[in-house]
Length: 472
Image (cartoon, rainbow, N blue to C red; front, side):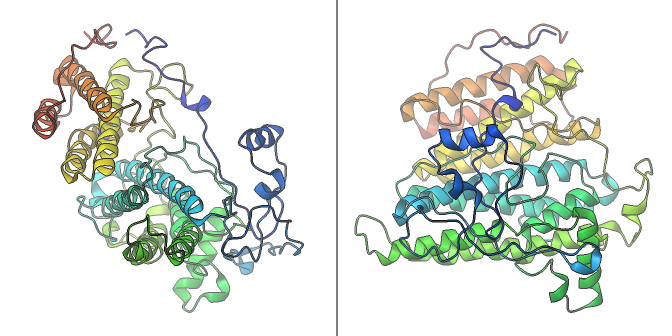
């Protein structure tokens, strides 16, 4: 099989970093800042001191030009007895105008929700069939992994709907993996379920104080804090998701207080954002806490699941690779041609889903959102299960073009048509090598629906498919 040429093979993931995180722990300058990071921040027009310090007293309407905190950094004692730090991080403010700041924060929130959703999906598909109770069936809830994934997708939708209500464009871009937000002492990866990965997810979703030994009220809570610190290491820094939504809510309330008559009624969004925060800090956190401690009912009462060797059939997860990719020329690319082709088809459905979501959010079309959900729950999930079962994993590669790459709605619709045609061609090329539950013809069905929804959508004659060689 021949690799893509440069036209059909965008820049590999390791060259497409888009990190813009500028949040640190309480007034502490970030250590060992690389020259590359400083140059990147300078290129973005950020004041370097403001990018590496967190400030107290940055009230409504305050400007970003502030001095770093003089508060002495607090140090954790080593050992489990110290407990893991859990004071809230403060979000560095970029704009004095609450509208500008809110749009910026919502873009950050959308990226975080998207990244979490993909990590949780990858984790879910790695779980062995014996523990299907941990995975669930895909209905939105806070008691199984796929349920949490669906809620993350709903949160992503809510954030984008608020962006559109503000007159801003929706965003469906996300960070590449590995992803290292500056507020965390660990990297985020696409990785199989393990005690280490569950520790990260529990920390990410935790409410303020829930990871602090000093707040533990029961022996079970104390045991959790001890085990979490052992998994993450001492000196872990504050929860980010909750801190981010606190900033979003505060900025939204500030914008509402301006009584700007050019904006719609934004008051109902305050409770919606509080609900997103509550979903994470209560339901999602408790789920990951139980999974991390091995007490989730889906483990069938096997209290020793995380002490078993990886080779044990009752160890919870299959050993899929970390951060795989279907992009050619990357060190993590799939080497087997058929595996890579199936992963590329999965990518196409992932990108179709995101393009449909972008159109749905932009136009307020629930039918486009429903079509996106159908691609996620149908072909994407079918391919992800097969790839994980084969020890490969679904890569969820980001598309460098973005999900609204054209200058008009009509052109974006035609772009989507071509993407559907690309997936349909590869589906036919793979034929019997597709999973037995793969919904063949799904791209044609989506196109038929889109044609009914929008008369401007017309099928374009697509060029020869790049996978035509090497799959025979």
